[in-house]
Image 1 (cartoon, rainbow, N blue to C red):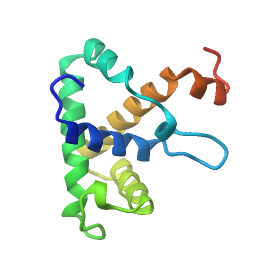
Image 2 (cartoon, helix red, strand yellow):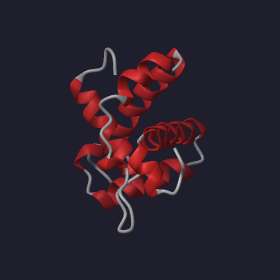
Image 3 (cartoon, one colour):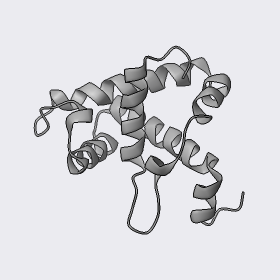
Image 4 (cartoon, rainbow, N blue to C red):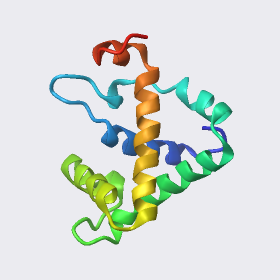
Length: 126
């Protein structure tokens, strides 16, 4: 996305891929090329959404480091621990963290459903 560091984009991609992973019966977001998605999102998303996405990326990348049971940043966790962390963020009593998790899910769904092969695989007519 415009103005983002390469490392931030890698962190965001890991977060999104963990949000909609590949499953045995279908491909998930890891199989989707997001090259054209990022410039379009940067162009159409309101500034507050872009800021929130960046805040989410930084928060969810580094928060596992200080939470009991994780002890590492998100990018250093196993797939199972990533799933556990995202589930914990979705169910936390902390409103802000739940909202950040919801934002991440929405962006992941936007990216997935923008991809025509993904829509076809999920039975959504383009």
